[in-house]
Image (cartoon, rainbow over all chains, first blue to last red; front, top):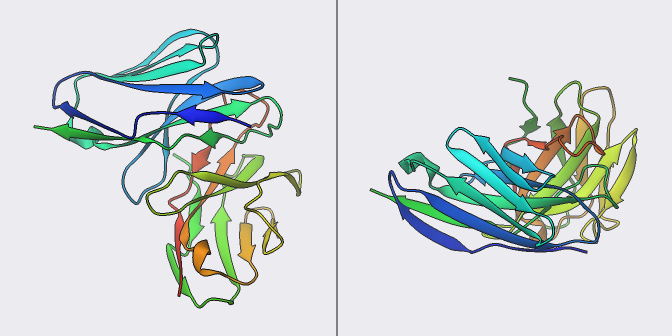
Length: 112
Length: 116
């Protein structure tokens, strides 16, 4: 089984930087994914980490430490449209077939 | 960009009725999934499907649920006798590979099921 924890809510200011943390416990790690979900819409893929370190993708970066069971998503130059839920999801080796287990999501509110 | 499509976008049904939710995954994807999200709660795994059979299923996916890939393009979720607690958004997802760690799931826009 898995345990995935992330803060429920965060607030940040337009133009600022925000870091959303995720901790996980899993028996056989095979990748960590971040998704963005606007209210009433589908989750959309943002980033993926399987090795330790930082992956950068434009204004979004994601970091992984496998030994600590820890990841964060970093959002730079925040825009109002970044107000959404950010979902941390883990893929295990067994069972796999690609399934992801999601955390509860962090609802980010960006204020002017 | 190819996308996963789901129909209908909203389904209202009476308790005890059968519903079929439909999905067309991305055409070259091989792995298919159903997830659900009860309002205000997290995205929960229901079932994965590969090579025309169920790969994994959660404890939510009991005997009232079934999946089918009736042809080369559609992937359906059937709920045999709906209960009030089945009211949720149901997401279909597909992936190019399952074991490959870099293959993200691509989600459809969901079907909002309301059981009255």
